[in-house]
Length: 158
Image: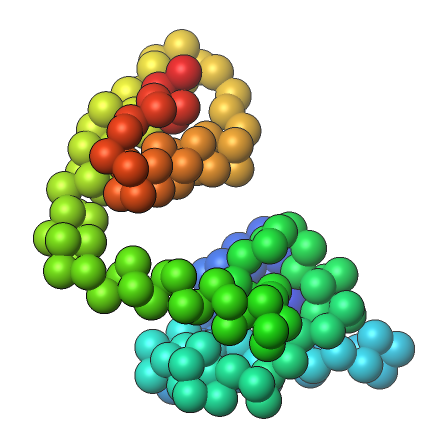
């Protein structure tokens, strides 16, 4: 797969999407012999559910995984089993709340309209370059703060 990925690097996301679609949403990405790290890639929600809830302990991350995916920071996907168990206690209670399910679409709509879209429009009109990772992080921080506390810090609108 490495040569295919290299020759299609300019359209990597399209290629990954195509390969996943051709393989029922899940592929085993075999890397070269010298890295010896194979990666299971899935877009199938039932597989994600299985990995994250049913058999999380079978999919240990380890230091090699964290080094490869360090750009994810301390996201749940990089946590080891003990860290994940602690975080799961908190997040499960939060996500089970009926109010969370009712308010999430409204909060996302609000933060898009008030924060993200105006910045993108302004930057486009003024031909400005944006750091999208920083902008999206700010957007997610705003949405998370509103969901968790009801307060809009307005980071994505600055």
